[in-house]
Each structure stands twice: as C-alpha cells, then as structure tokens.
Length: 149
Image (cartoon, rainbow, N blue to C red; front, side):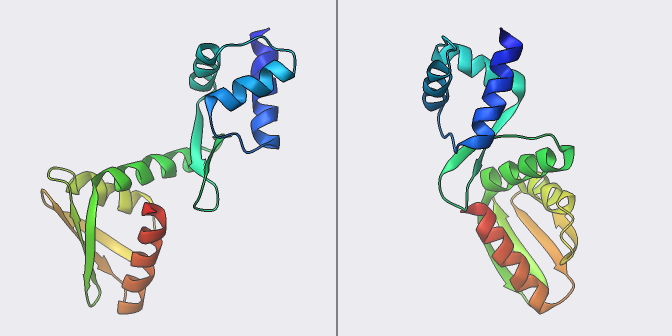
C-alpha cells in the first residue's frame, strides 16, 4: 500500500502544483487512499520531496532526482538564511551576512559555480567575491537578488 501511495504522490505532484500537505492529502483521498496529514508528512520526508518557488511566486512540492539540483537548493537555502545585504566596488561584490554565516554563504556561492565569480573570501559577517568584470558583478547581483526573492 505504501509503495502504491508513494507512486501516486509522485504522479500527483508532477501533474498538479501542490502547495501544502493538506492539499496533497485531499488529492490522495480523492484517489482512494485513506490518509491523514501525518501520513502525508511522513511520506514527504521519506520521498525527500522539497518545496520550490514556481516562477518566483507560489511554492510547490517537487521530487529531486538530480544530486546537483538537490545541492543547489541546499546552497540557496544557506544564501537565504545568511544574507543581509550586498554592494559592489567595481569588480568586487561585497555581501553582508548574519554574524557567523559569511563562510557558509561564501562556500555556497563557490559551490554554485557561477561563471561570473572567480572566488570568495569570507570573514565573520562579510563575503568579498572577486568578479571577472564590472558587468559580471551586476549580473551576479541580479542572479542573487532573484534567488533571494
């Protein structure tokens, strides 16, 4: 029964933009699976489903099968958790972070492998990113702004 339910969950989240556990439980019940929100919560954890923003707006559940995509989402969470502000000085991007988060934010930026970033140096609450050019600094700031929304 659990295997069939998991298969149906994957089918449903691929077919519909499901935003909440309650919505998923309702759709499962409509499909003939008698589930509670607690069961759905366990299933989400077991299937390693994640919520991602759809077109920068509402969030929906998705299945991550690609390790790179999973890791990218992890790094984006670090950026969102640690980021406070950013500014530029020519081809240097300066990012202010929550105290103690600069190294994690710098490592996350490095791990995303953006072509614009040559490398990052981090202290306690500040990350300095060396960029290839002034234009690349602006491009990276735009990318970062979109991720943080």
